Image 1 (cartoon, rainbow, N blue to C red):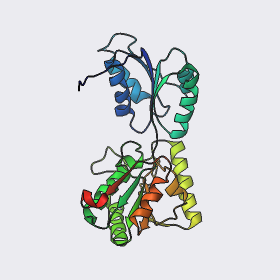
Image 2 (image 1 turned 90 degrees about the vertical axis):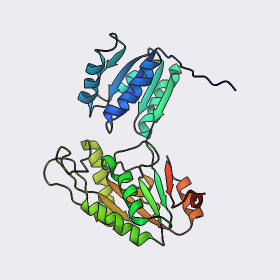
Image 3 (image 1 turned 135 degrees about the horizontal axis):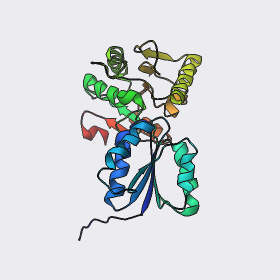
Image 4 (image 1 turned 135 degrees about the vertical axis):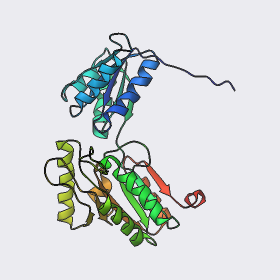
Length: 289
C-alpha cells in the first residue's frame, strides 16, 4: 500500500466564521485555505467584526496583498458570497438552518462546501461511574463558554443519567452550578460569562419562559445584576423527552438531565434525536459496548 498526501487547490475560497469562537474558527479556515494555495475572502458574523478584522491586520504583514481579504457586513452579505460565481468553495460554520440556506445558494454554481453546523449533543451517564469526577466532566462539557459551543462530541446539550445514581449525580451537578462564579471574564476567578448577543439571549429567555409555563423544576446558580446578557447556569430536572429543552439545541448555560433505566432504550432515544453528536461516560470502555 502506498500512502500519500493530496492537496487540492480551489483558487478562491469564501469563509464565513461564527460569533461563538471567532478567532480559532477563523484560523481553522484561513490555515487550510492558504496552505493549499488558495486565496480567501473571510466574513465574520455581524456580532464579531472587529475581532476578525484584527486577524486580517495581523496576517497582511506576512502574505501578499489579496491573499487574505476580510470583509464585514450585515446578514445580506453572506448570501451574496455563497451565490457569487467568483468563489470556488465555501467554508461555513454556524447554525443548521443557515447551513441549509448556504447549500441551496451554492448549488447553482456547484461550489464545494464545508459545513460545520450545530448539534444537539447527548451524554449518557452509566451507573458505574465515579459520580464526583463525572459530574465535573459533564459540567464543563455543558457549561464551557456558557454553553455556546457546537463542535466535538464532548459538549453536551442534554444528559441522560441512570436511575440508580440520578439523585446523587443531580446533587453533585447542583453543587457545581451553585459554586461556579459567573460575571465579567476579565476578573479573577470568574469562570462563566454572558450570552454573546441580544438575539441569542432573547432565544434563551424564550426557552426559560417555556420552562415556567410547563412547570419544570429548575436548579439555578446566580447571575450578576446590571448590564450584560447573563443567564444563570441552570439544570432542568428530568423534563419530558418531547420538551423543547431536550429536542432543541439551546446554545446557553442550560442543561436538561433526564433519568433513564434501560441502556438499550436510551440509546434508541438518543439515536432518534435530530442533529446528534453524543458520548457515553462509563467506568470502563467494556461497559459502553
